[in-house]
Image 1: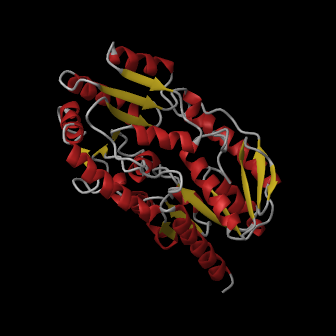
Image 2: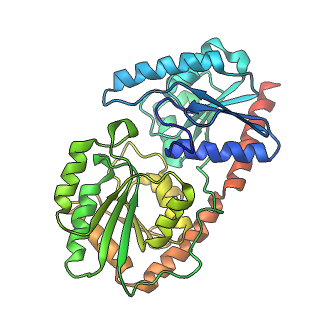
Length: 369
């Protein structure tokens, strides 16, 4: 059961929505009866997978208003939700209402795909709190020590059939592209990335920066004023701002055409387990990230990617130096890219789906004791 603010694929492109769309189809292909509920999407059955569309909302800048809309959405879920063995949900209020008023509908697994904001105690009646990264699991326990025994960590999966390296190795003897994919929001560090890229462009001819993602507030972006400020900072440099790419195959091509991927997030208590760097790694693309703990589940600096100090006095210089290691040395880029693609295999969709099914089986076994 997905949240109220982002449409399900193929109309939507949010990371959580994409993950559960892929997992639901994989569960169904393995013979399980699956019902996927969320905003928008294409309703109806398709084999073992049934999609139920709900009336969603557009997110606002105001937290209290968003929580009110989420509560209305949760009430709608209770009316439409069929009985199931396991119910996985990631919206704010739905697990609260389900465990208080509708426990007969199924065992509740809370999918914690964002950094906890001290709300985990509300979910004490859920069967499992499933974190998408080690840093999130640790933070749940820190904020709610009494829930330690209910916390499990399972990573987000990658569809390696779609996100795979190009058939021919990337060439570094012509134009070079640095790519960012994600929300265009101040917490993503894009102003630092633009300054770093412009510094490199002074002596790296043919270098360009491509920023792909949503900027609208209701899609998680920083709004038109923030986008305008980034464009002003870019000036006449070869920096492109591109609308979000919904089609996973087209998005994979964005990664395969690039020479370096950069995700300079500054969200110390916002990032859970960003999907874009892992998707880039799966395509054999060398990745540069900020020094946040959330990347530690898949990126080892110097081995399969690079990290820069975003907390220092001159983060743009640190980022420029890290980017230069990749852009000026094709052998370093090749080594990091190959190691990144190898690491991404551990997040294969089918293998991660089996881990989820094992978790659900454990939840049901515990319920029968």
